[in-house]
Length: 380
Image (cartoon, rainbow, N blue to C red; front, side, top):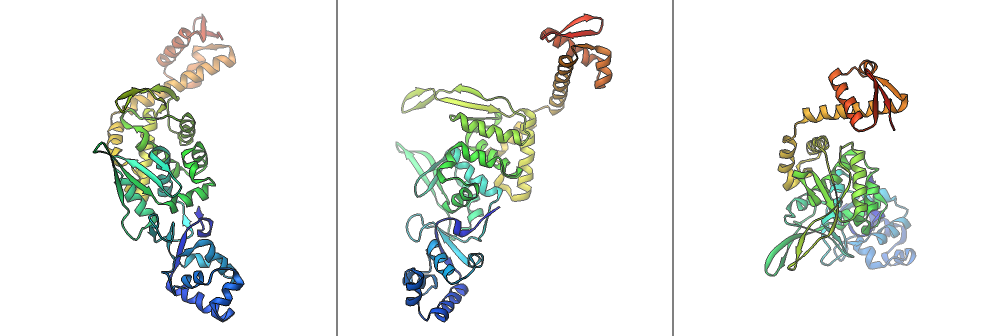
């Protein structure tokens, strides 16, 4: 699971040793930069900059591989000598990262871009994440892209009061993941992103759900709510693929105040059931043990632990077994048309009192009728 540097756009700087090698190779084969520039159709100044003779060494990706291809150099070897990457050669978005290529897609990378769906905004030159506390995503970003300097967090104010913190998710990360998933940057806000994530390994899908729980979740209620039904449906597909028990999607309206007025936006939500939230918590613990503490629920981790502790899982497991037994007996009645209490007890090796309770429940639901002592017929 990786992306090569030539598959994305950006500006790169080679290490000094390879820059010297390029200069020697060009002069040996062509005599001068001027002649080589004319033959390969790349500006002489660009070639000179790549060899670190002027301008600091950062050049456009496409230009680098255009002239190294002309020299007959293998792209994989050139890639390994890239020392730094920038989204732009100069300017506000020209942050510098010390990355190794090919870039490996990890659960941390997927966790980062998954936050774009909920509280992220995609612009032409940047992807911005807004939250009350953006320090967690800043720390995770620094672990993934290894910036030369500290990444900055901005602050938004409204009417002179604190509104939220804002953080620019590194574009190089978003580009690499979108290339691997074969989507555009704008697709991070669309259901297709989650459709692509559905095919990822388990550890990756757990982090997708974790991002939604942080941004759009109410942990004590075990609920995730969003206004886009299609995104909620795709997220439920991921939950189902992980084997987490959940309730069906519900349509709700929540009163919200904006600029002094109350309105009721349409929301779609689903709830993780007791066993589902426990399994999710266990998977997160394994992820933290394997990849580090930045992959838990951040400021909501304490709420998750308290929610898991509050459930009586012995009762839940008994309830689940009883539910499955009732479904099996109902299915048997539908198939056989006539069933006997004694044969059901032997077939399912179940407690007679439990069987009596289930048979009574099915009678009350008009699924079966009692036609004799311990004999029942299917009604529907």
